[in-house]
Length: 214
Image 1 (cartoon, rainbow, N blue to C red):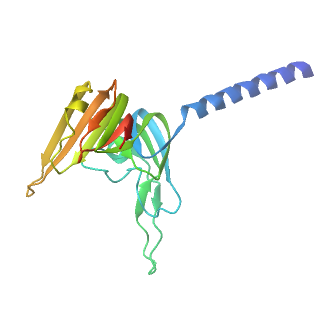
Image 2: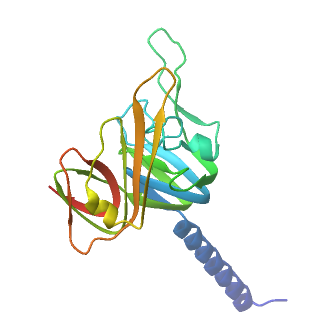
C-alpha cells in the first residue's frame, strides 16, 4: 500500500504535467488584431469582432478584401457556426455575418494569403501574422525584410527605389468580361532599405515590416 507521501508526490507530479501542458497549449495560440496579413500551414483560428461593428466580416471568412486575396472559406474548412445578424422588425431571420472558426488553413503569400481588417480579432495556431501600415505618398519608406502590396484600377507608379530595394517584385492584371477596367495587383517582397526611400505622390501601398513617414 502506498503511503500518503507517495500519493502526494504522484498528485504533485500530475499537476505539474497538466500545468506544463496548459502552458504549451496557450503558447501555441496567438491573438491577431487587424489590419494585417495572415499566413498559415495547417492552421486553425477562432474569429470575433470588436463590439458595435454590426454585421460585418473584417476577418474575411466570407468576403474578399479585393479580388487577388483569399477568404478563409477558400483556404480552409470553415465551421457551420456563423455569427448571425439580428432579425429585422418583421421577424425575418437574420443572415450570416462571418464564420466563427476555420481549421486546416493553408494560406501563403502571394497566391493564397489572407488580409484581415481593423476590427477583426483572430485567435490562431499554426499561423503567422504581419501587421500592416498604410503608405500613401509622398513620403519616406523604411523596411527590414518588408513586404508591400497595392491593389488598384488606376495608373501605378511608386518609383524605382522600392523595386531596387526588393528581392522580388511582380504584378497581376485582370480585365473582366464586358469591362475595360484593368484590376491590378503589385507586390514587393524582401524589402531592405539602408536609408529611407522616397514614395511618390499617388502611390498607395499596404506594407508589413516597414515604417512610413509623410
